[in-house]
Length: 428
Image (cartoon, rainbow, N blue to C red; front, side, top):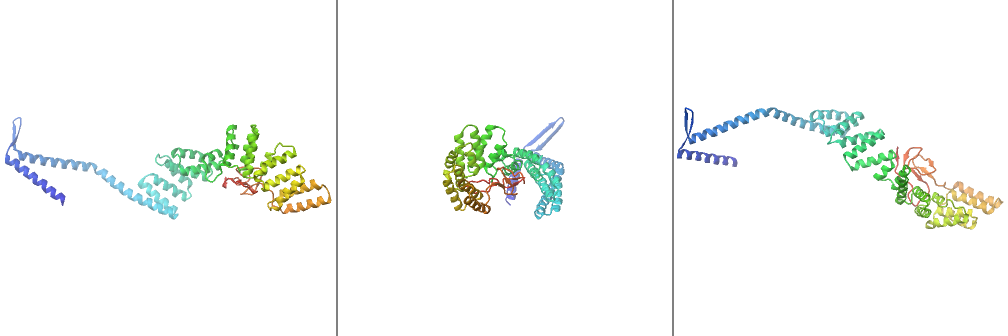
């Protein structure tokens, strides 16, 4: 309505202006050679307006005629877009319902209508994977990886496929490319950590700080594969500092310090480790090289003072006192350990040695030895390193079980104040 009013106003003004020009008179004359034309002003203006309208109409008509094919293409593209979007929706529904064959049909229709766009290629890969056609899915992922706007999506799918078929070199290559395409991606960091564990690349796993894994164990495992001595020593130190209660790390660090001539610091490390988690290997390393039996007793007392009532402390003191012929001291420690209910087979065998040392080959001595031997048969076994996956017993800790290939399940079976089981289970 408002536009009609404005149009009427414009027409009224135009007519009034034309009437005004007619009233004041005047003419426009044109001479070309022998031709002479004279027209009133208002007639000339009418001709100009009519000519402008006609010319404008002709130009608009020509423009419309030229753009007619593009308009046809645009309408066809819009129709294809609508039909393609509907096919994409049907593909998503089929994938959600687990109808892989229907999903493949619909996604082919979507690709025909929309072309190879990132979302049609991704849906193609998922439909083919759901149908069990891994190679066809990888072809779609490779097509995605060749696009600048969807390279990470393609590399992610190819990486997942490589890890599923345990092609570790290919997976490592794809992980590096994915990192370059999308630096710092959280998902990629987790996958790289898993890949590092499966390929036993402990330095990479340590650098990524894989969730749920012990830094101490990773640092120690990395040190065992490190060729540079300085770097190896630094990793052993890092492992110990991360968890003083992880015995293998403490032993490695102490031995490195001892080899470099820093005996005092090595003994301090072992004392800290004993305080965190007493372990028989710590005592063996601490007293290594001490020949005098009384000095060994003094050394053992120094080591265990922070954990004086721990079963390992009592057992160590009882054994060393027996070796020094301090039978009263040895009996007090060992019988106190038995009375605590925390003794294992080693404590009863130590009492057998004590009876043999104190009473010799006498009837009373043989009777006492028999008593403790019977008790040893019913006692818990001595602790050891054992794989929690297959049950294989190991002489030393290792990041991977050599029998079943499982990562992180070798743990110390005895009572510990610190953490000795430091990896999550990861089947290689």
